[in-house]
Length: 494
Ligand SMILES: Cc1cc2nc3c(=O)[nH]c(=O)nc-3n(C[C@H](O)[C@H](O)[C@H](O)COP(=O)(O)OP(=O)(O)OC[C@H]3O[C@@H](n4cnc5c(N)ncnc54)[C@H](O)[C@@H]3O)c2cc1C
Ligand code: FES
Ligand code: FES
Image (tube, rainbow, N blue to C red; front, top):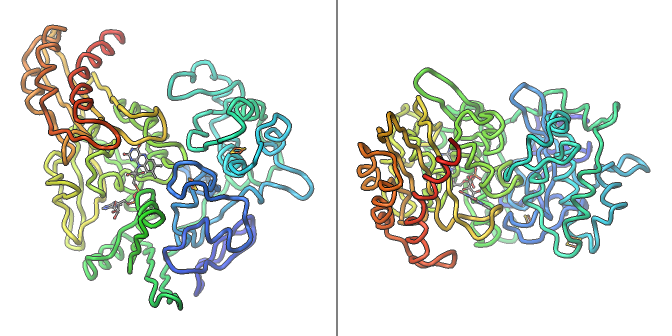
């Protein structure tokens, strides 16, 4: 498969090995672009990242310098973000007269009825089919079967389909198809592509005029952080976009348009994980999936949180910086990061500063981040607390936003709580620390009596509201029972 040239005057993407110029105003999403060039397998079901009918595969860099085929929701991704990238759609999995093994298994096992969701399922399944760790997971399949990882006998992680919904077939035949897959055959060109490096993130500058509506806007993807910060300093109103899983919903559902967009998701300086004796630093543009893989449980609290964050399709694009960039009170990472005493590195053209996450949120969707600043990294101080937990209370276990989220990090020495950190989300205008409960716990014996005594204090932290996700009363009840649940989990784990 040939990568498009990096020197060019127009944005280009390789789709199923054919190079296409990317056209349309900068807010055009990848789904509309693909369908516009006749690749109509990917479908629009919801246009908000919930159904997966629009899933495609993109060649993304892996930590070891190779390439990983990564499934993403094309309805949320700006088409311009595909500049210089390589994409495979469900059409591209067919090789001459032969359908792909994933397509074959879905057909023979009755995994498709109306077929609307099928191309999306096929792309998510194919990305999992090529997951390099799958062969190892096949031999350790029983070990990998817990509530967050459920691998079949062939190592296929069924949660890789958590972002794909089917309204008519039913999921059993789809699971049967997934678990019937073998390993890629020698000579499989899509598997062979993973052994080479992924396309580089060429800088992009798309400034188009939409003849119907006047000037449509500008999309820029600088190739260095310094360049990005210069743009931000000169144009503080520019819209920063990373994985676009929040922004794409704004565009599709609320009709949001930005005159000027600055893409930061491929900036090398914002990616990766750095470890020192004092902290673990997470690059703000690392995706949730990359963090899950590369941390490999080394920050257990994040290991508990990430599988509960949205779906695999969303986690493959959503960045940790984006989750904090919105300043949302219901993001899942703030309660966990507050419990971990995390700090944010805020970087502008004039330098960097480190702020405590607990001081970052100042009001509803408001933060201390200045107009010219980006979140460049998240620091987790070491050592980590030995007892941690993440409780996400939502209507569905996967692919849902929290009604309430609670992160715990507690240290007990000789039966006494020496440090307690509790982060809360969904119970106030901002994520917050349960400081009164923390104070009550610290210095107290780690017993059920202490826990019961602190439950009412925890129930009174925050100012929960009624909304379509949950009532204030329910949120308060969830807080009240949460500490006992944490205690029970810890005692059960001893
Ligand atoms: C179907 C669906 C399910 C979801 N489920 C969950 C869930 O379970 N839990 C949850 O917490 N969220 C969830 N989300 C929300 C979303 O996926 C997350 O908030 C995600 O982390 C956003 O990251 P992003 O890279 O896509 O951000 P983008 O959409 O690119 O950007 C979001 C905002 O952050 C700003 N931003 C991005 N990066 C930076 C940076 N480095 N510095 C400063 N500002 C920045 C942008 O300017 C923008 O305002 C869901 C979204 C969808 C569509
Ligand atoms: S159309 Fe439903 S996730 Fe994209
Ligand atoms: S086959 Fe009809 S929605 Fe899945």
